[in-house]
Image 1 (cartoon, rainbow, N blue to C red):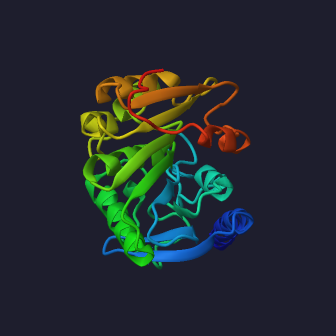
Image 2 (cartoon, rainbow, N blue to C red):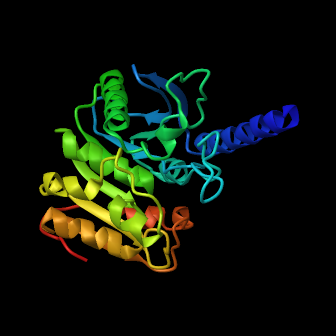
Length: 270
């Protein structure tokens, strides 16, 4: 048992070191944001206070170690959203890890397995992340934000966009935008305690958005994004199919090129 605990601790430490190295390459500084529900690890690069923020939201991380066994720590092995944030040349870039990633139960008493499994898109999680964004806005004097979410972070980004009034644009990368459809596709349990982004899609009808989908993604197939934009009404949302990309990408190899595509209304569809 002691060996297992030491091994687990070492693995998490290695994941933190990987993330710190990526953040350093992107000139991102670490900050912990406290909310009543969770403490969130963020990395930030703020060069133009009061100007819009581009906020990247991480994927589900290591939520499961097998089909039936959840992980004891959801910290990602490959923090895709952090890799993308580090590459973003924008003046104000913020990366937010998901609840319980990088910050364990010792600093996050609310961290329990359901918050990175069946409740990971619950109202309390979305509200906590929204509260963290409010704090970041306050500290940077920003009034508007652009959201970018990878995989499950795409679900969080869409749900945040549906309830906030300060969103300039939404980008998702391999976004988990229809939970019920994806779970049925892979024959996994439904998540009644989580919100489903596609059920909120109509609230995003006037938000400029691009949903990047990997042509070789078998986990969250391109049909997921296509279903989502149909529910938005198409006028402000479009899907960009990226050749050669699987769910893991490697999205960072294409990100600077993909960032040049700007979300705009009037260019909806595929």
